[in-house]
Image 1 (cartoon, rainbow, N blue to C red):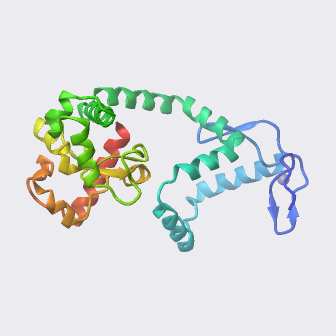
Image 2 (tube, protein in one colour):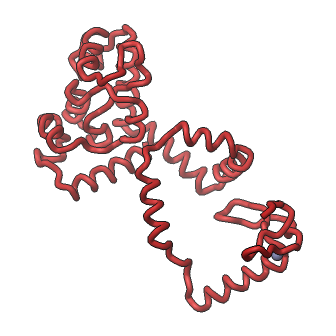
Image 3 (cartoon, rainbow, N blue to C red):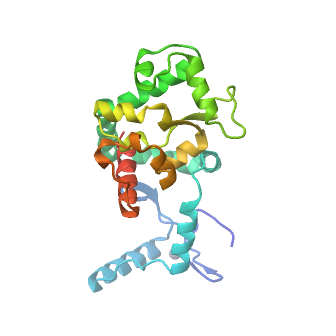
Length: 261
Ligand SMILES: [Zn+2]
């Protein structure tokens, strides 16, 4: 079927409404979007919505096939490249929508609140500060904070440690493609001194592909790997290996913490 943006988009099999699109915009989740239907069909769908609401009908639940497909999609690792490409090809449609969304008072307030929270969270400040100091250290600058937390006194010490955790393809030169990853995510630790030491202990740090670091985020390593760094578990775990449920709970909370900071 030929797509025309000035023609009503109501269709059934081979029939398509010949009326022109109604002029003006309506609010969709608070964002003004132009009408896609003619006046007649706008009125028709509105009256259907009203009738459904009166009968207490809600949106049809997704079919199992659609649910499974969505589940599969969510399993795919997050790919910045794919998202970037999607954005570039659909920029004209997406950019104004994004800009409009950012201007909705609720979103704006939340964004500002999160930024303030980020600045005030000690864990976040430490994360940013130490990670950047380690980056600088790998390029040769010394840092007292990093020395205190990790025991590395120089770039060689730091690089030696990361080298020992390299996987195929990583070299000292392609830093940036790999980053300083935490086996137990920073967001799992509390804000106390002991937790800071455990979090930045070299045994909790390893060279991790940047793409992996971005999509793994706060996922806990498997049990055998966890047991090997028992002395580095967050204080709040009380030396207890998290059960499967506890794991999920920890990851969920940490993920939320991540987003918040
Ligand atoms: Zn129509």
